[in-house]
Length: 59
Image 1: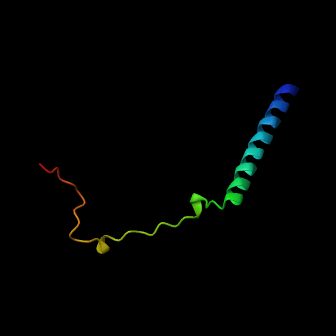
Image 2: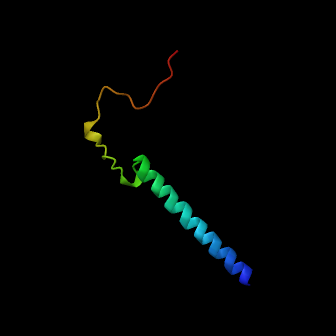
Image 3: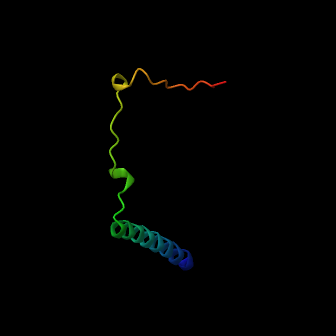
């Protein structure tokens, strides 16, 4: 029982270490997290009428 508890604590500690290590590397590299990106919504009214959305095979 004691071995299982120590193994679980070692697993949790390793998981916390990896999480903090990756976060530190992202901060040092200046990498933006994907959750911080804002994607603007696309309006159907702004589409160009000359653009075909479905491609047709050319023969």
